[in-house]
Figure 1: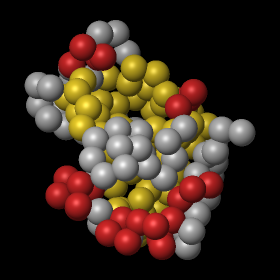
Figure 2 (figure 1 turned 135 degrees about the vertical axis):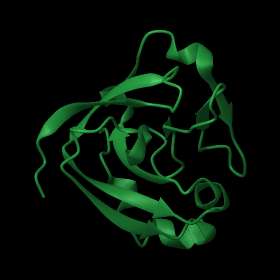
Figure 3 (figure 1 turned 60 degrees about the vertical axis):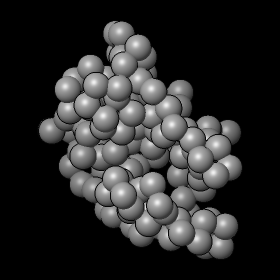
Length: 136
């Protein structure tokens, strides 16, 4: 896999929420089957939060939903309802980016792996999701 770091731009459907993230052009994305991700058909890759930047006045169009342990912060646009990024439970020091919300042209490859979020505690130790872009 090519790990060239580049800047990806993206956002929600109505474009009120816009962001940039510095990440490889080839990423591993996670297809999670937890109750929230499966309902939204969420498939995301993880980047360190220090590599993520909200643009302009995007913050005013965001709202957050939490449940369960309240570690994950499900952010979504107040206008169109799209979750283009959020803080994942697996990597609370990172940002999960919905790869389909990245503007076309910068992702050269997306490898999709499965994550058994319905059995979160047992799955967490059996996958490498926790080590994705740790910010030590």
